[in-house]
Image (cartoon, rainbow, N blue to C red):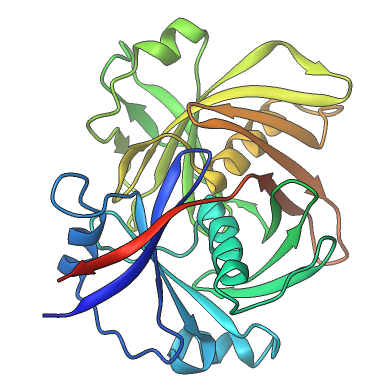
Length: 291
């Protein structure tokens, strides 16, 4: 049996089990990771995050070739134990965890590069919370039909990649959003090969206040089910609504999710437009568990 020290954290209710493994000594199977995330028989969480120095993982070493300062790799798996490229809420919580554990320093206004399977993510420390530069985003060219429980008619979705895959669906009203049953995964036609997180969004009325767009969102995350929040999903949802709104739509958005409020901003760069995500990151408690 193996005894692990863990910390439980969350970002707007999107919760994670965090493990410190600087030397990459832990060898956890997908089933063991799923057991840690199990809400009845384990600690419980939407995912498991392992803190390991980049040099100890092949994906981390590949990132270090481009960014030598990315000492830490966020090894993230979904609640079912499957690997995921990145997690927008998780990376803010991961940064907070590294700081609290004394593994990294990030003063207010500073930047910490973190390695992920989606590449480098720069995390900035704000006065309250953190902001993560998710990098360049893209429309993936797909518009699958989406069926979900509580949605009488299939709706078209918009495929967006922000380091991991998303399909965003626009709904007509708050009532439609509330009527959804996301206990079962929405059906996509065609189904993306790697699956996708599916976001359902409703614009606020008015859509824009003081130059900031406002939307509400619910999400079903692949490998985790419905969650109280999805950071990359919030970014994808804001990007989709801006795309649909057309010219003149703002580049700053407020996304309300069941677990709180996230900020999304689109920033032009020489290499293409980046999208950033800001919000809180909380560590709730620490303990030990025996597998």
